[in-house]
Image (cartoon, rainbow, N blue to C red):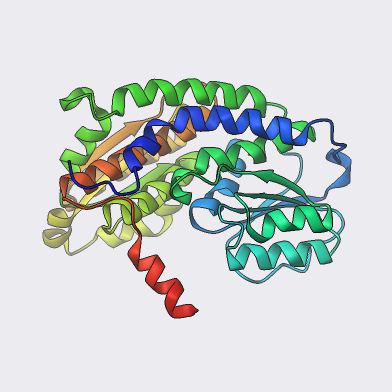
Length: 347
């Protein structure tokens, strides 16, 4: 097997246990602490970047029908002017030092917002000690933030559950743990051939560029994660979009250059059990228009019970697929040298 210097395969194997451990750890960390509730907030804000920032996207997709107030995901430096005493702000950073996230967290505290910090240490942990901020720890031994999604999303969901803002979160976490365990048994390296769906997807994608289309809000978050995982793990280009938005713009981009695109792109559709019937109709119609312009169309269906289980299942299949793409190309999936070099250049 290609060198796996950061133990990525082992990290993926442990994802179900990581989610279960983070679920239990967050509940213990909060304990009997008095928390504000539904009537104390006008909105919820998630701050984070990269593998930490997607935590907010997951929560929004899972809680879209339940969260009682608007929820915003910030992935930039500037702190919005609406953040104040009636804001619930989550600052999520595996290292606790991500500059955009730390800046927003400090600004939120100064504005009087109720801040929840989720990190493996760093400045965000120090805020807990020095400013009385609720800090929920993340296992700092996880080798890379992008493989700590389960460890970071569980504390956010547990907090919202205990505040009465997301009553289905506890049951959702339990069902997601069960589904990730089932999917792990299918995708682990010991399972060969077409019986391993992630290895088979990687074999079929091969050297083409995956274009990942997700159905609805849940599929969109999974598609974004697929793109990120292929970029970071396989060190390859990938792109994503979502139904129904892509049918109002991107669909027109298939009008020419088909002789080029059909050699380059594999369209991967991510479906789940929560799609509106109109989304299914759009997907079918779009495939008929696009099929002559891409090398192939592959479809991945989520398994599991509930929105969280299905979303994490799609993400998990994508993570495994991206790692198999890396290993097949003799690429170490662990290091992300381009990001390291960029940070060094920025000082």
